[in-house]
Structures are given as structure tokens and as C-alpha cells.
Image 1: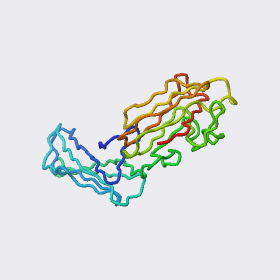
Image 2: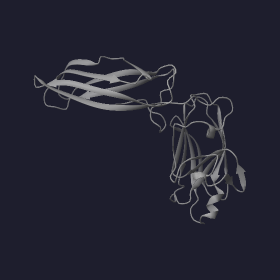
Image 3: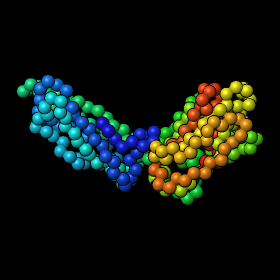
Image 4: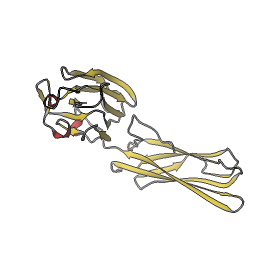
Length: 254
């Protein structure tokens, strides 16, 4: 099952937009299959309609039945994950029947931010942290306020490498600003580690790379987001492993 991909989150089905879902039933047997059919079912949150024929009287060996559907979130659909269930059926050897099944996951996102907004106030599509969990408006795992070079930042995200946080922007935002760096709390832990690399992706295309950042300095971020549907904030380990890599996206604003 192939679904429209986004940066690294998986397929996002925004209200009012159509997504294409395609599937292929391939005959890898030594004889033709007959009465081949593919169907797609979804919850009441999503409407699906076939764009190509869903049946074939016969599929010879090495051939396939391919079907494409259009999927659309219904008005008022609630944010969250939706599973599409694919079922294939066929006959063989004159009277034998067979079936296959697969699932495809879609995500109906929360509404994108409006006006000027801090992303720590916005629901994310997904969030991972290499140690503990992504923390809103605090150092990773609520280890204290976001603090870099002695300056406290009231808003932002605290993570540990390797980390990825994804937001749905729906093409509504023009710029992203932030200050990124290593949280001062690493100085209370060890003199080892504490390096990271901050990267930003717009719909899978990298639009910012901080290079390696250590505990001695921060970086200012100011990037164009025009047209961005899905935003990915990635933190790598700086090339020396993940130990003590407590990293901050401070003042993270769109």
C-alpha cells in the first residue's frame, strides 16, 4: 500500500485536501487468478472513492491489478490517527479462493497555528527524544527552565539527541525564528558530551543546518516557511554520540 508521504511523520490528511492511496495485487503464482478484486474501507472520519477499476476477470502470472483511491477527511473530522483497511480477493485452480489484507495509516492533523505563535503551544504530529521525552517550555524531561549561556528562555522545546518533532503548518506560516543550543544543565552533569546539530526540514527538504553546536555558544535561526505543509525539527548527535546532548529549541516561534 502506497500513501502520500511527508517529511518523516507519515501520511497527513488535512481537512479539505484529497490524498491518493494506491494498492497492487500481484500474482506471483504459476497460473492465472480470476475474479480478482481490491477494496478499501475507512472509518467515518474519511471518505474514500475508487479512481480506477477495482476488479479484473483474470490476472495472469507475473501480472497485477492496481487500484487508486481518493481519500478525504470529512468536515469536522477529529484530529488523530485513522486506519484504512485494504482487502484483496481472488480465485484460483478453478474453485479455490484466496484473500489478502493490509492496513495503511493516515493522520488527521490539528489545525495549523495562526498569527504569531509559539510551537510549544501547538499540538505536534509526532515527537521523539533520544533520552526521556520532548518537553514543552523546559529542558528535556522537565529538568528545569530552558537555559543557555546563562539566559533563561520561557518558551520552547527541550530535547535530547537524537530527536525529531513534527508539526503540521498547512501552508499558513511564513517564518520560523528560534535560538538553538545546548542547555546549561549539561554543565551540572559532566564535562563530556554536550554537542548537537539542529536541522529543519520543510516537506522533506532541508532548509536549515546549524552545524555542530557545543555548550560554548548558541545559534540564531530565522528561516522562510512559505508554503510549508509539514515541518520537521531534527536534532542529531554532532557526530560524537548522544551522551549529555540536552538540546533546546528556545523561543521557537512561527
